[in-house]
Amino acid sequence: MAKGTMKYIGKGLEEKKEKKAHAKVYLIKDRCKGCNFCIEFCPKQVLVESKEFNIKGYYLPKLVEIPGEKECVGCGYCSFICPEFAIFAELKDEEEH
Ligand code: SF4
Ligand code: SF4
Image (cartoon, rainbow, N blue to C red):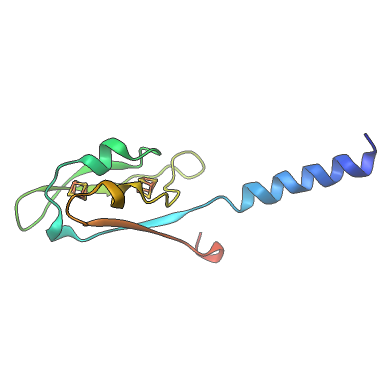
């Protein structure tokens, strides 16, 4: 393979890494009923039960991310699985990282 081609492939990989999806999670606290479905089924395992509870007395989920390792990717599965429509994620703009 020509030297120039290798350089091009390397650059492509770097660009792909920089554009990794990243999202912010929003919770409508008083809708949550503490079922923990979002925590159990998040494919990135970035949700955990917090010590905070809502007006109904249910413990709320919270986001725990490890930059570069465990981060919300905005797949939307938590909002899909939540029976109370209490949680959703929005993709962040590149500059917001
Ligand atoms: S959007 Fe996906 S990765 Fe982010 S918290 Fe919800 S289920 Fe997890
Ligand atoms: S799935 Fe919805 S109702 Fe259940 S813990 Fe998560 S946010 Fe609360």
